[in-house]
Length: 246
Ligand code: PEP
Image (cartoon, rainbow, N blue to C red; front, side, top):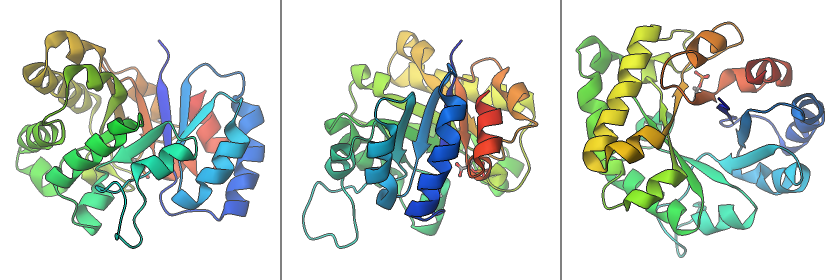
């Protein structure tokens, strides 16, 4: 089945470097069948819009504002991102939760902002090392999902992808066992089924993210219920990212 492979550039590359990246990357992926999304810094959206039109690669932002417009210096709204041709935005990445103190309630608000302008959402959930070591993974994921999805209509779920990203696995070279990933992905489906319905939960696309590389990607993609990958560090090299997508 077709998988969704998302690259998260984080705060990396200048616009010129990103342009060079695309010149190398696009010819290598043009015949590949997986869904490909590049989540780039806001400053790169215009270039992405120009260079990715009529390609098989979609793009998105890594965050959006909780607000629509107004006196919010430094913020970028969902409609601004959408107006540059983006299809997706990441919401609730653990770096935003931790470094910028984003709350579950703000994440819920951001999701509503994105869906309101037809931007698809990649919602990140996952436990810290402390929570993992103290058997709190399910508790954390349930809370994150329940608040993030609060007040949404069931038919909006089709525009949401959920990324399971254990915080302790991001950028550390560590990954959970395949059994652990399978259990959490299954649990995410159960929570979504409780909130909405089994039918909608079954249709959900759930990604795994956290230290995915060329060596572990194939095994992770074989895990029951994993619909794709969210890739940070390894997407910054076009060669490595092409291999992962392949
Ligand atoms: C991420 O930032 O979403 C991520 C998964 O990072 P990395 O692949 O570097 O662990």
